[in-house]
Image (cartoon, rainbow, N blue to C red):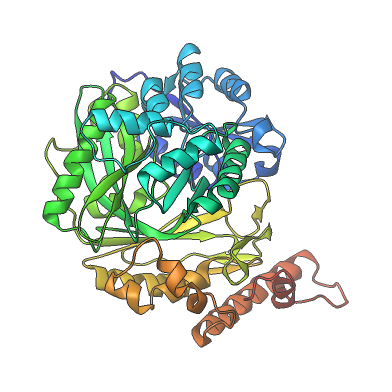
Length: 507
């Protein structure tokens, strides 16, 4: 727990969903009070129920609630918070928000505004990394303001190339281009998407690396100049640059490569005076070369797998660093123990192009047992709205080796029951039995090669069995509710099985 000398007492969590729940729990374990903020749509959400205080920000749209800096600062002032933790997404990587928090006399639980600003601009980050001696993918020196500039840069770099938003992230504002004839069309698409997502349509050009893996290194620094790394996470199973499954350690990284990538990641963080938790992302080629991709100056969605294999609590370490304390970790490279896998369970239909789904979770049961962790922000009766990210929760397992971790994840996925709307669960179940994945033989093009088989519409027999169990449990729970609510009520009601089926929840 934080010591008497720390200046933190009450932390406002400027986020929602599972990450808000995660941070609130860490605050309580550190002996800190927590404040939940919420939109009108999130008034009854789990993170609001768990916090010591709550503050309503405004209407459901994020621009009027979770992205409203003025309202967030007002919430901190009125609830007596002395620190703000941004989580991930929303304003987590906003230098302007970090500066506003500091101007208000509050502590920002994250890196400095300077580090956020440098690493938040993709072209500036590339230049900074090149100056620090970190290998970067060959690309344009800065933003390409026009199609003609992009054509010149691509011609010099050599096709295929990747167009990327300068202010981007999460795969938005990113387009691959195979030849000059396609560049103008893709340039306009990338710029338009970047402008819509980030308010900045600037893009730059870099070489497209063929069949790389997406491997990231977790770093953690304090305000005493100590920066260390906690190994790698394999994040190559993606759809449209959005991660779906992560694991640690990577099947493609041995001890020597881990040490080399870790040293490079630390060098990158030190070059911008970084403190708090952050992630340096790399493209790893089949021959073992790696290139800087970007730095995420925040907590990552997939941070639990690092916590599982290194025995750390990254959120509590963030709170310690924000309080001006050193990290509790040793000042030497740490060794991973065992293997951890994370499946992002989203409210999406994997058999319909991962189309986002909304609705009420009629019934939910999460798995448990040795080596299983569920980081979620919803429960039975929760409503998944169209206003925010489709992530429901993260199913995480740990075992003594990769083979056993896969077996454990299969079991956990079989036990997970969510009735009322489609989720990505069937997709994850199929990946855990797919030969290339079980061998660890995959890269960022994995879904391009095996997606048609994995996403076939007909559920496997085991999936139908799980659905039947879920429906039976839901029916039993609903029957008990009806009996308690109206024991003498006559008439006909559709079963939860039919209700869920009509909403597409029983795929």
